[in-house]
Image (tube, rainbow, N blue to C red):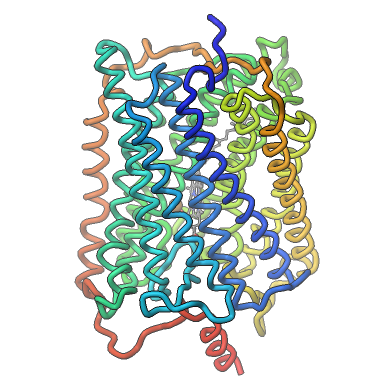
Length: 585
Ligand code: HAS
Ligand code: CU
């Protein structure tokens, strides 16, 4: 195979947009990550420099900046890279590409400003309402945010839709030039993911534009909280796979190469992405097993679909590990497990991604437990769930992205990574920090430690005898949080220092892993995107029509008309705390 130059030499314009998207994601990571430490120390009562009401402002900023801004900016960068590299052509019109990027930035800034003004003693009045959004990343009604929060989210999501349109546009142009070729695997992954993103974001767009935004503007009196919650989770489960898909893409098309080998099977990878397109959306109700007002039968259907959706991840575990093993054997590895030693453990890109994968295996187990309707009653709304998603999005996804950045940033800048050893230490520290933190969260959650509260030690609450001492749990979380913060700082330092490095010509070539079984072994029907989209849409209609109809029937489209009574927790957490204190006394 001919040696190719760094990405930036092939596609200088696209490299600039991707770099901008990555830096936007790093800024979100820096701020959101720091707030994570503030929370870990506050909740565990190790060190408090906030008033408890501000905890919810911090929690909202942490959730939104990390789960939405960091992940999705990194995704749009990765996908733009994957499409252009695999199709070997640039985007059709780079002004359009800059346009959606700018739209996403404006949306993010609007959301961030609205959230952060919650720290002010007196939030400024804009459009007749205090600029504030202590609604957490799920923005459930009856918590209400300032209209700017919803408008910012809409801009961000529409920006991502246009990004998807850009990838399709590039692919259409390529298809005209290459009518008889199979869709290259990375582009196939991007397109299938974009399709389920379009399907699932319709739910959140509907929720915001028809219900939450008019309500926060005072155009409508009230909302039906269960309806907006259900629309949120219609989107909210699929979004977790949206975060995961760029990590999977990198595990499939890059990790085998970093391991020294080839992807085990291109057809299997296509099957996996088709399954995600089909099944990511019609199961959001597994986040609502404890919601009253949804019949058990619909919850059961959601559970069944969730169990089917384990399949593509189990296939991924098999395919990716088989590819890594192939790499190890190419490097001289031998024996049943002895091959593990032959892997390039000194390479931070490989090691970061492999550790992210290992953590994801554990995360998959906690996910299966969440998904069981009956066991979910034990863990729902506890710290267990927080443990689960710090392994999934907080490690499988975030650690993969950080590890990949050590490869991407040199590709995009033509500069050598500042420090390999610091990078290696960084990915190891993330793994260790997360082991402490998420282990303690899972364990305490099992015994009822609640999530999303600044004051978990409420009166009469006894979990001490069951999980060991509160002190031990708290120390593990606080220690984990500190290690993660050190790791984050090392990551950012490496990225910044790399940008100041001189230009180097030792950048590895920008090619994907080869395959042991290639696209020629894939049935052509796998590339029939129209067919899969039609089936995916049908499944969504089957899973959601009846539950939504019954929610509207019993709770009203715009709520039951609770006149004069409006919960103001969203607008004013201090008031909520006062009310709470009154109730407790
Ligand atoms: Fe989840 C709650 C069920 C996956 C994120 N999840 C959450 C929340 C978040 C989240 C953020 O059914 C909280 C939302 C909130 O605020 O309320 N989740 C699942 C299931 C899966 C799952 C069944 N979740 C994810 C992923 C996420 C994510 C991925 C983000 C990226 N989750 C739930 C449920 C709830 C929930 C319930 C609601 C809980 C409640 O009560 O509130 C599955 O997709 C998991 C499948 C994964 C596997 C693992 C396969 C293993 C692999 C590793 C390969 C190894 C390698 C390494 C590559 C079966 C692929 C090799 C290395 C060598 C050295 C060889
Ligand atoms: Cu889910």
